[in-house]
Amino acid sequence: MSDSTTKPVTTDKFTEPGGSAVPSNGTGLTPRAEREDFSTRKLSRKRRPVGAYFAVGFLMLMFVFPLLYLVNTALKSPQEYIANPVGIVSSPQWGNFAEAWQRGNFGDYILNTALYTIAGASIGTFIALVMGFPVSRGYIRGGKLWTALFVLVLFLPNALMTQFQLLLRLDLYNTRLGYILMVAVGVGIGPLLFSGFVKSIPKELDEAAALDGIGYWRYLFRFIFPLARPALATIFILQAVWIWNEIILATVLFSNSKLWPIATGLNAFKGTYSNNWTLLAAATLIVATPLIIGYIFIQKYLVNGVVGAVKG
Amino acid sequence: MRTSFSMGTIILILFAFVPAIAVVFVSFTNLKGLPGLPVEWIGFDNYRSYFGPGHRADNVNAFRNTIVFASLATVLQISIGLAIAMLLNRPLRGRNFYRSVVFMPTVLGVTVTALIWSLMFNTSGGPIQSILNAFGTDSAFFGDPNIALYLVIFCQVWMQLGVTVIIFLSGLQAIPADLYEVAAIDGASPWQRFRFVTIPMLAPSITANVLLGVVNAMQSYQLTYVLTGQSNRATQVLSLQVYEQAFGGRSGTTLAQSQGYAAAISMVQFFFVGTITFLTLWWLRRREAKL
Image 1 (cartoon, rainbow over the protein chains, first blue to last red):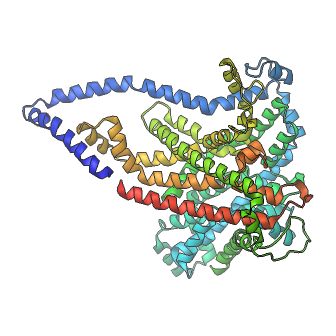
Image 2: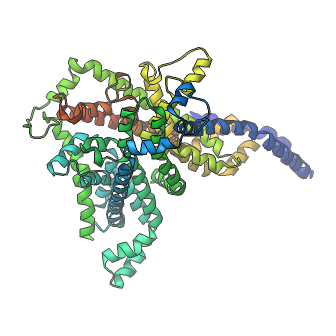
Image 3: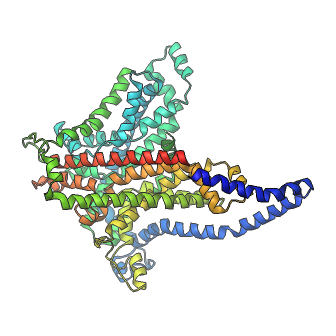
């Protein structure tokens, strides 16, 4: 339908101005016409962005204001917050952060989360590397089947209860190792992304290495690993962000609150101090600050990952 | 090669695929959350009970919420995301910074996002309440069962919008500029340029975004869990029902925690999501071919 409507519209419009434009070309009017066109364009460019900047301003308000308000609340004393919740803070209470840090055990939780994130994402990236490479090269039998497996991993059903039961039966329930393994296999698009990336590494390199008698392990970690570093970094970071923010599995797989990651800790903190908004805001900011600072450095990889995932 | 490959494969299969496949079997048993209880094969009892009249009201409610959540979140994400992407694709000063800001909530995660917006939607004197007060009304926000679901959708869109925008931006940048020039020379109005150049050229990005949005939104419940709790009827969705049935009463004290029944819900959801995904994919492919 759309095809049949496009063509008449464009051809109609083409014949009208086109008819007047062709003679002007012939009579040497082009420079003037061009200049006119140029100047009007310049004018419109100067005028136009006002609306665009207005829209951008609104957009920034939607995304930055909540964070600023969070900071503002975190710095208030409880009395000041109750008296005037939306006003700008008058005397900043930096002690809120120390108090929230202590009461919420965030020191322990951050260490837990750091451990889970690094270990989990490393194992996940390792899986993507050792599976993605041979599958992409066709060194493993049933290549298509494995690729299908990589896709399937994205569409698994909600298996909370069986994940819980499996760890229970393996004696890994309520252990750090059990949780790390469970988040490690949340590889998402990792293997798929990596097997796509491997195609850009020339196969001749494999053959040359094989001729030189370099073993597979050495080849994979000494040659492929450095070559694939940007792709692996992207895979690692995508999974790390997921693990850092994971909350449900941690609730289900730990009964000991000492082992919780920080997201679960913050959620529990919210349950305990649900009315103490200044403390809660300070706690939220404690959790959010490393994320925002880290974001500045990993943004490039995240964008690559998202764009790469779509193309793959 | 064999060893390294099988190491990765074993971890992945044992901890990702075994639990996933086990869900199918568990859904035919009366497995409980408490360890050590005998597990019996009970055939289709869980499914019978799910589709039976006893749970109908709850299940219909969860289904309706899931559909509203998924469709509204996807539509909003696509339309707002496209508008933002087009805005940030223009040669504006500092647009890289704006892009970064819009993409930032993706790293914040559900807990931080939920807390930020609980604070914004605080009923006693939060900023949005203050605005409403200025207009002489007020709202219970997440406490109001009529709007709680929509507020959760709003937060979900806020959190996920960055991904949509990035995908659209990469699609927009791939459109050759001369197409617009040709269209402009042909006298196409801005709307026509959008409709007949941007949209068809963006078709792959739109497909990706719709698919990603639908699959994501139908299975996401983490934000709902943090924002309104696990058993709030107004925001109950399918995945949350699975969680509630399997782990509802904390620390395994209630008998209501039937993991077999939860597995049955999970299977129903799995087929539902699968069907919708295939239908969406089929519809998008057809549309792409037409454009």
